[in-house]
Image 1 (cartoon, rainbow, N blue to C red):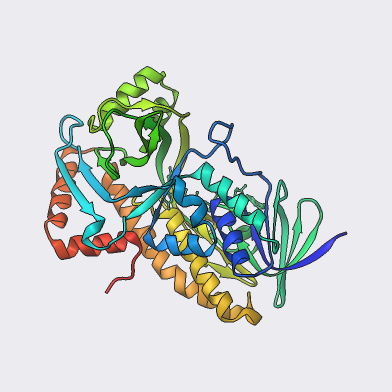
Image 2 (cartoon, rainbow, N blue to C red; image 1 turned 45 degrees about the horizontal axis):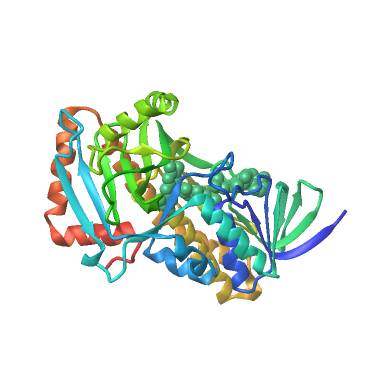
Length: 401
Ligand SMILES: Cc1cc2nc3c(=O)[nH]c(=O)nc-3n(C[C@H](O)[C@H](O)[C@H](O)COP(=O)(O)OP(=O)(O)OC[C@H]3O[C@@H](n4cnc5c(N)ncnc54)[C@H](O)[C@@H]3O)c2cc1C
């Protein structure tokens, strides 16, 4: 049986796992990345991930270090303004609109939006450039045994890998997390998100808009024009049965319904991709590390898609882990390093999971009195400039204080 050794084994080649492989590979570590599901890198192909990711400012540094930003920048759409709209009145018309302009806190835009299928395409290409990184799509982690000195991983093709550090980037049901005996706390909302792209007659002006009414936010995030028409990605969160109804609806009827839900802010919306459906939960692992193992991304934490936090938190996990590995390359994966990783990430992630859980619960509310309170809350917070700026910095993942 083949037995190979490596510095780092990344289990999972989703967006987070591929980013980890590119980042640690660019830093010179020997990396193997495995995933039983080969990445889908074409928007039109079955199984393409039609979500987009709004990368916030702190993620830019990580993407640069991973050698990814030069590849991604030509496809990215800048997000300059974050617009919050309350449309919780009798009709879905906007009744309170507040703009959070990045210029108030920074010289840079809030973030940059990119389609997930394209991220996979560029990440796979970047990883292929690195001679010290091996990406093995179609092969998964089958079993894990850890001891003081190494993680021994058996892959689905029978290969045995001895890694100094095992990075679990294998998603919300993480088999590695289970294998190393770490539990997780999960909050279910009975809610799903529809993700798809649309065109519309009016330009988005690089404004990302979150519209609150009931069932969860309806968010439009700018994309580059498509066939000469302004284009946006949409994430539409609703309670489960309503989301399923919308998912199954005839296209013309769906176009009319989503235009109404958008308050027609850009005029009539036209669906231009398939609709994809995503279950919404919050989840946090009880610990982010075990012997020779670090949990990152959705293996460690899952949040509802509000404020573009999910993958941005994942890149922050990778930034901290890389900093620790670089600081003590002879001690990669040792207990003290992994304890430090857990301590630096867990409190920050737990605070964000709690904050986003709260925002989601507020956004889901259907009762008119609570919707009125929500509208008043948005106006009040916005009216206090120091609070507004603090919220903006926190949302961006910047350090406060
Ligand atoms: C609708 C929606 C919109 C979002 N928008 C944003 C946004 O704007 N900004 C943002 O920051 N975040 C956003 N997120 C969150 C972001 O999409 C997720 O954080 C991210 O896609 C999760 O990536 P991941 O790599 O952790 O998990 P996954 O994509 O689930 O990848 C896990 C991988 O592990 C693999 N795997 C499973 N078992 C094994 C095994 N045994 N061995 C090896 N590999 C295995 C799987 O095949 C899979 O490819 C959004 C989420 C949703 C639902």
